[in-house]
Image 1 (cartoon, protein in one colour):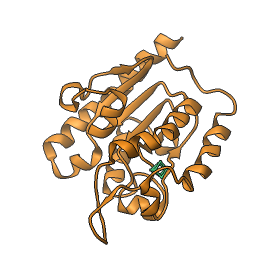
Image 2 (cartoon, protein in one colour):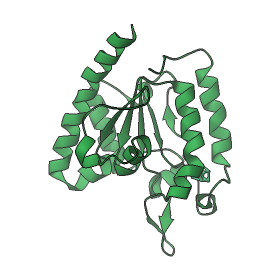
Image 3 (tube, helix red, strand yellow):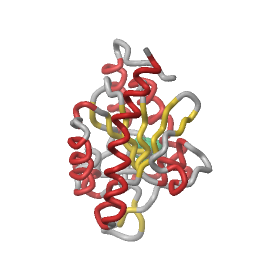
Image 4 (cartoon, helix red, strand yellow):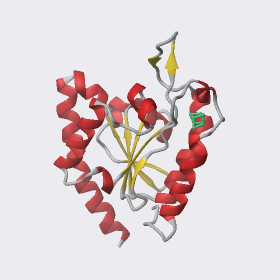
Length: 202
Ligand code: SF4
């Protein structure tokens, strides 16, 4: 099991943000407005990992600031948490874009995910969360290679000793009422899972 927070985690996490903002490791640096390192506390028990920044996140340099972000905030509130209690980031820190200007969103490509993975792993190493929530297909595939989101969604998995809970991405739930209810139901499981993990780590 990944241990709990240690002194200096905040500094280590903060120190990662500056190089991420100027990272040249993949092609996404050429089309970004802002890299989006992540937001939240180094003392987070839970880290939420989405796919990548969208248009609004790219403009503002913060993750989950659009309607999907509002829904994420609602779900956090429903289980007694605020953004300041958790850490929120993405698999890739710069917006994957497709087509001609004004550019639409697309899923990150495998080489972009590989290039960006050391940043995510360094963030997880600094925070050492009890639980990672993988929001959607791409983060689920990253943490649990070969797993299908439809098969593992809402059920606690592990990558080595790191507990991982795969969930729908909040953006999907915005236009699918059935998935919204499922996501809310899965989200409520976080409370019990964290309780169980705390007991195990005592
Ligand atoms: S997506 Fe990641 S690896 Fe690519 S330029 Fe941005 S920070 Fe660097």
